Length: 227
Image (cartoon, rainbow, N blue to C red):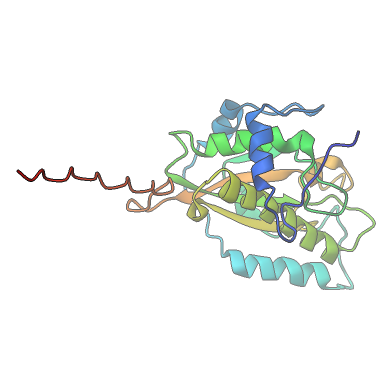
């Protein structure tokens, strides 16, 4: 029987809870999930924040992906669109999605849960993070792949924020499509479709890392006895 799937980035998804329950139950498929400590170990070496204007970068990605440049050097020699990101602590995750969609496959639920566990580890609570989507070169247009990579990065962010309650102020997302390959010598390699988690910056001192806890209900005072 085929495992049921749900759209994380699609329309109307009350099933986000199903993802959390599957993770809590230890759902795991053929994919081997990284441990929380694996992820923490990659992300806790922050030294300096990168100067990244995310709205401007998103626009730049789309403009370059849509442009039909006469002298485009091709995927092997195409320059990185955001080289500064390569200097940040990074964890590369092999998240499986349904083809051409931002729908996360069940085999990857556990990996997403481990990422959430890592982001609330004591050593990472002072930091903000960037979810970066990539796509390997394929038969689709560069523009279509840029859009898909953004939707997939957004999908992971939505799960972290809405299902695992990671503070929305700590997690942002960007899709780089084919504009920043991991392996430019092999643009069609599956490694170029990996998703990245980057340690982006340090939270301001007065910014809470965890969502505020709900206020405890006021204790009802016992009624005075009348004599």
